[in-house]
Length: 305
Figure 1 (tube, rainbow, N blue to C red):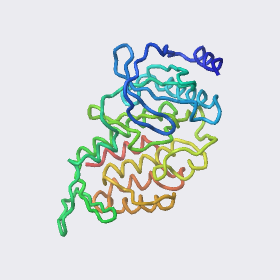
Figure 2: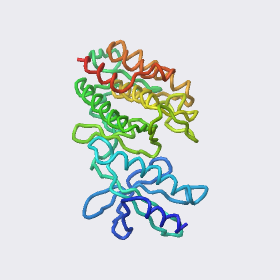
Figure 3: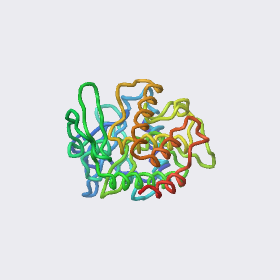
Figure 4: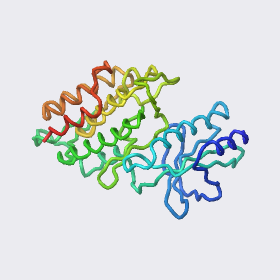
């Protein structure tokens, strides 16, 4: 196993000796990785930790980190895409742990956490009249009104689309777009978590070996391992819908159930935002060939006032 890590160090730039890192407290988790807060060169960082005990075979941890490092190499330094500062590994407690060192943006949560902030929600009272741009949401016996400012929704939506355009311009597909994988930093969206991302190189579509994405946000073809920019466009449409309505989900646990919830939420949005609804409806078409590219979405969003 040590030989594999030594080859990883020789093949990829950005190696950081483990003793140069300071690991502080646990922060959060995502997929099979835990994320810790830490310091590197007196700079606050986050450490995405790949532990060999979470893999069926030792080489799996190396394969995952190589894939992700390749994506970060292509991304480079960009203000709307998560910045990687390097990688390291240790074999503490007789397990091999590999770390990707990423920028700490000093936020307390992701975009999902942001729109769930209680300042944007109030409990609905019986027979209460909603303003035109407020949204009603009911889950089981609870009823709520979501009232994030419309102009701010437009700003967030545009920033998200610009971030995705930057990624797609590099021929990279995120493959797991959702509000949990976005940060709002200084009023702009930053895309994070490229563990599922794939580079298309010169292809329009590639076939992957495993299912990717998150139920509800993912298109049907991605579940079969078919990956393209249009896969992200589907997820983008769902994310925009969630930003505007505040919540989509009920209790669906299949692709068809979740799609019904998305369509129901979209119909509600269309009653208030007809033009935006048209854009989202095209994004979530089942046929990927009929979904627009991100440039077209940005152009059409510019007409929303």
